Length: 370
Image 1: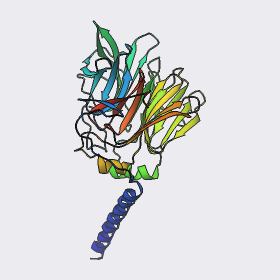
Image 2: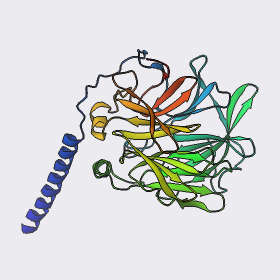
Image 3: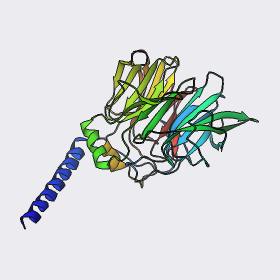
Image 4: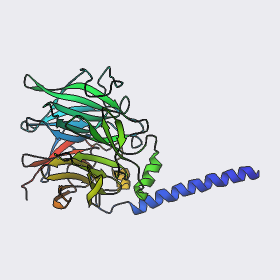
């Protein structure tokens, strides 16, 4: 009887702690702004929207300066109960229409010999497109299915149409769970390891409050494989970009609300930018870097953006920062508009193009609008 009482007391105590933790998170991490649901697919005075996408999480500009390549995100665990497939698509900025892009299997020349594929099932996340030192265009895709890999494709223009030909893949370390990737001209890359596989939803919710380190940046090359980058630790590493001269990494840490500039030769942090929201992806633009920040808490996401919501309406800010010191040049904040939970802002032809990890559209706003 005493043993049963003791077990019952322990269970009751654990349950009480969980309830207290969840109550604390709710009370301390709920924003007081008004949120209106988004219905339909209509532009407004703030943004122009283009639908028929599924979680268009990351965007790069193709060499023709006309098309955007878009990663239609699958899902990540534990925010989803399982990984699900996604796809890669195109958007024509002249016709303002979504297009498909053909993916074909090819020879593994840019990946590991032990990483092979028989099909092109993808659950894409972060992407990067870079012109290699040999002039060829390499696309790297963080991929969560059927296992955790970084997929390599060559971007080709065949008879006026863009095609992606598979050129190999790299298997992730056993416990790694990747978010984004930044390519070097020699085909090596850096990738953000968000947190270890198997983390529970409750643990991740607690970390969003405690902000302890959960991950770091990996470097990969054909000679050494994966190595950990010193001084890259943080709470939920997310977007990553590399400067054009390949001397600096720019890393976004979700729970730290921080963008860091990591000098690669010295492996020292040279500058930081802090925001009230959670930074996601970034985009290199000459001497500047654009960072998309979601101006909400994890609790806001739970309340307003469950799986039944077609387009999450939560507010966001796009920051234009100087690479030199991460000082703010401009900040474009949006709320009560036709897109939310924005993950990336890509400047292109006097507009900034927006993607989201929880929605069915991309959007743009004019840089010269009042």
